[in-house]
Picture 1 (cartoon, rainbow, N blue to C red):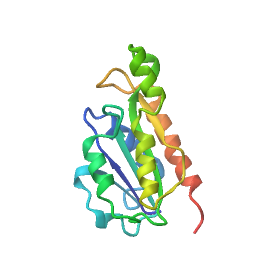
Picture 2: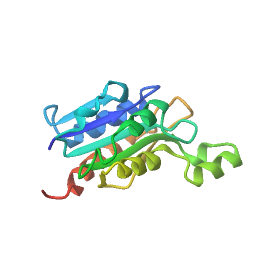
Picture 3: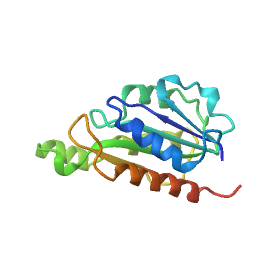
Length: 162
């Protein structure tokens, strides 16, 4: 399967998750992993699966991830199977009641990434997922890399046969 995992990362947590997902999907010849700033839109051609991940920044994907998603041509992902993930602070770890309310009403990056991928013609193969970090900079919660690998395996199983 030809897949590409595109991610942004500030403190290395989202990159670790992207790498775990990529390794569970396939080998280096089948699965490319790139930082969002290094991707050119022509790299999306010929893919069977596109996975996009970002840290959650101010309740949204990172600015670089948003620019990438906005720059995909209309229907540029037509027929391509897609998935989205983010790294985030757990709601239980957020001290402010107001911030918890905002987060609970849709304030993580994965949901908006998935929505944009579908708007550009992609077909979502799994619900968007978040992986948890401690504090703003991490590290990842214990077990999150294993959960990322399992999610990657589930992506492969979710693929619609050609």
